Length: 181
Image (cartoon, rainbow, N blue to C red; front, side, top):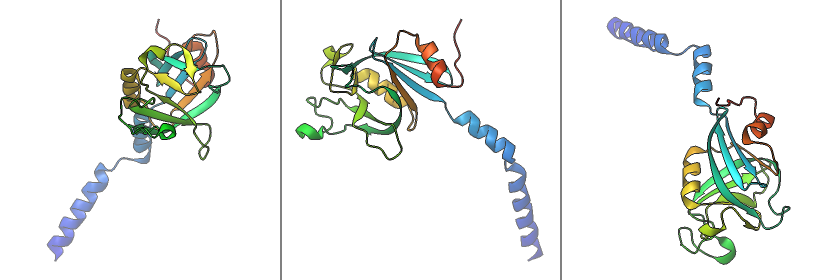
């Protein structure tokens, strides 16, 4: 019995010796957490993806037929769906006729708000770079697949119409921006 207690105490003590201190845990969490930002500029029909203050990639997009159709402001990624059905026309997800493509990122301005807008693929690759949507942001299917894999739920999305560079726009919407020289 004494032997079991000693073994238990040794195992228990060893577990605590390897347990990270609260400051270590906080530091580890800070390293894992990513600061992600998407900026969509309706003036240029471009989307920029920033991570940890660095511009990672830009993509061409399509936006609303009129300036008011694609809303401006701050949003966030609320959900990610592969092969989302197009309910309006009853087209199943994954169908080549589906105008949403095979990746869909629902955006919202509030935690419980609706998200009638999204960043998604499309079934008309020629529409990218144009003002053709009913408000959503369309991307080439290979581009949305790439972004879909990189982006996290709750990442910030900013939609603007501006002549400023993406780095200047990012400085307005994040605490850190790393500019390559």
